[in-house]
Image (tube, rainbow, N blue to C red):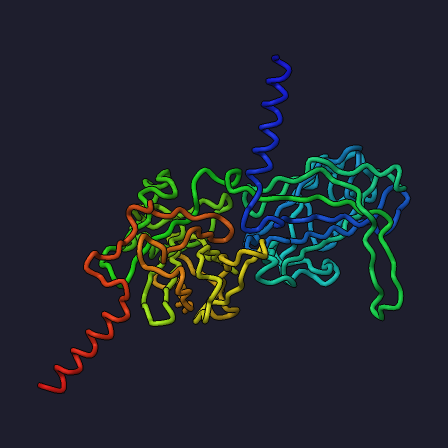
Length: 434
């Protein structure tokens, strides 16, 4: 009986571990790290390591990714191109040619833009920033070359690294063990010859918001044209641990030099609010036409130390299957299940509003969205016009409780368009008469 219980607990732990890293809006989203052995050396091999971000709406922003692993034998890194190990480690036993890194558990980061040409590699040197696959596939790849010594020199003697870790830039990613896969094939520039890697293995890393942080990073507030009530973000929606460290919007401290400089530990400097979230998304039901309705979406940054580059906003609503026009954002439907089209990704237009500035007068971006009505489902009752889920940069935001949503007044006619038309007609008549 005891053995049965231990087995059951272990099985449940495995199931919940995988469930925590499963995103129902992006079920196939992951970061795949591929090692291609391109040549053998007298004491090891030269490999090209490629990192592909296959997540539709979760990117890695500055200060970028950090990749780590554990060597199985006594491997060292002789050289790297396009990336660098953060520590060299103890290389005192080597004479003459000193390795780039001798640590058993190396930690690797991308090179910064502008490094000398001889240190660059294809798809490198972006400071570790990786765009999401859905937003910019061409910028969702990062790669570097590594020369490994004191390692195996054949497919049978090479030992795959283990215990892979990925920070993007903070915690949240869990990586699988390395797995040998069919060798990657390459075409020559003229496409007339095909070559292949000598050996290839993959590592798959998936993200879990529960692993990343204890509290949400964003919240949602709501308002409508038919009710003066504004439903604010829930109190302490993102935790109130930083309440004693926050700064009021009119504080003289904001004029100090360096107040907006990010810290190495990525600690936020938040504006004092009742929700204490770095980012707030406001969803406003603005207008109701005969065949269409319009919403306004506003993103506000309350963090004085972070600019959100290449931000993404994902919303789930049944009427997103019929988006007519998005005025100031780019938009892409997300259809992980072909039979359901109720989710879409909003993101900034390049060089226009793809940067959400730090907290302050410029720390917001906004757009209006025009949607065509489905006569069978459209209603303004019972909060139907508000989103079911909202994600910012891949993290789910906290919505207010449904019983606090702005409600449709009892005296309102079911068809608010007819009421608005009648009111405008009466006003016009009064203007003509007087």
